[in-house]
Amino acid sequence: MDDPKYIVGIDLGTTNSVIAYCPIPKDSTDLSEIKIFKIPQLVEAGSIGRSDTLPSFIFHPGENDVPDGALELPWDNNINYAVGEFARNRGVEIPNRLIASTKSWLCHTGVDRNGPILPWDSPDETSKKSPVQATADILTHIRNAWNHEMGNDAALEKQEIFLTVPASFDAVARDLTVKASELAGLERITLLEEPQAAFYAWLEQQGEEWRKNISVGDRILVCDVGGGTTDFSLIQSSEIAGELTLERIAVGDHLLVGGDNMDVALAHVLAQKVSEEGHKLNPWQMRGLWQSCRKAKEELYSNPKKRTYPITILGRGSSLIGGTIESRLTKEELNNNISEGFFPLCDKDTEPVQYKRVGMKKMGLEYTSDPAITHHLAKFLKHHTQDDAHYPTAVLFNGGVMKSTAMRKRTLQAISAWQESRLSIRELTNHNFDLAVATGAAYYGMARHGKGIRIRAGLNKTYYIGIEPSLPAVPGMSIPVKYLCVAPFGMEEGSGGEITDQNFGLILGETVKFDLYASNIRKQDQMGFFVETEEDDITLVSSMETQLEKDNDSSGTMIPIRLQVSVTEIGTLELWCVSNENDQKWKLEFNVRELNN
Image (cartoon, rainbow, N blue to C red; front, side, top):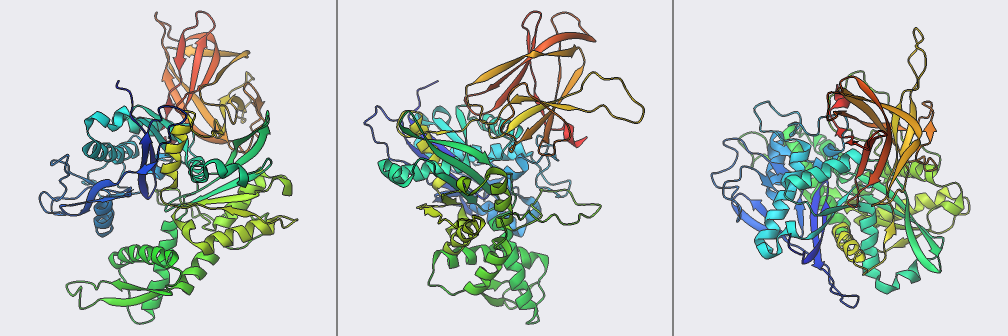
């Protein structure tokens, strides 16, 4: 393979994707400027535009949904789907043809992520894709767009690529992200957590001045509230051998709450307003109103002097223009509904509200039941801080929602109130909330070449395998399962280990199943440590199964084995069964369908 010319950071966002890049530095004195790649995409039927962001939406039109040739791209005139701005806008009008929130589907344990299920809840005759393939389609558009603009000599598949994922992604979701990248023809990739990438972008902004803003003992909370998800991470500053070092010490859960929820909330506020004026909106008008509220929210937050924003709702039926409804979203309505609904002030012991569940629920994305982001933040800090000394001393905000000064101040107010000492918490300035993750990913690539500081991180969870003990069967009682820790929190990329002091037997010639569990709270458990089943801070991630064979026919044979574990350089977890007899190895493959049976 040709030597790479560029370091490329790809933010594969829930709502928007971004590409940042820079030349690979030639030596320690080479200062490489990070640039944003303007992504060619359909902006209207048959019309190509270029933008810093690529909306992460895929539109699969029906036979009469777009004119002939409307989806043609400069590099492909036979494509039958659209990715980007046109896909998002046209998909609002025909939602059962639109694939959205692909990244959230990719980590949804309740569905077959390798099966053709998207667009979700669409008619059977609709062309469907798996979450893995849909992710690959977005990456394929990025690859083709890059290659068209940069030329085959600098083809994306030949470059060093750093692809970001939520910090909360477990081993299975990371593995599927790699699979999607390979389907898109991108095999030279490394995974990087999004909050870390946002912090790397801050380091890039600061240059050598960052040490004046971070001191030994500082704890930095990265609070990333994007269009579809919320992600928390804690980064600790310490001193080793006289050098200031950074380490990611905690990550939060995958929270499906963000700007999209806020747009829907604002749409209902305006729907109520126009209803009081005698206008009842149908579902089609509501979908259009959601998009209008998104634009209004962004405009009002980005322009402090604006007090209101006009909203136009098309009429129903044949009289679309004549029946147009006019309204306005005010800054007061915006702040009141977003602040009180999504960022309410609360006690530090507040837990997210668990609403009483209905016996039957329509399958779909696992949206967070409590939309109050401060409730989830309080829970996160409660689990990862013992006292005031462990509370964040600084916060770095990221994501489109946090462009709002009001939301950032509200969050800082909440955190300050949770500390008995009421110490002030400073905000680290983010110069671009939309582009930071991609920029930080490119900076991380430079740091791997010695051109910047690296954050110590490793595995974002502690992983376990369920082990059934050798006990006599008792009528009416199930045999308890113990959790064997196979990979501790923070286990670094490129490292590995082996569990040799336990006796395990493995069946050959039959399908063997393992249950994989994880915890982002239990950080003290080490490889080979057993945990009892009563622990409620360990959750099932997935099941793994494989048909293990030997050279000769070994059906039904049990052999003694040991477990080997490694964290790859690209950030994925590998588990191997190794024979004690001849060192033959079997890799345990993740099976993401088993949980659905």
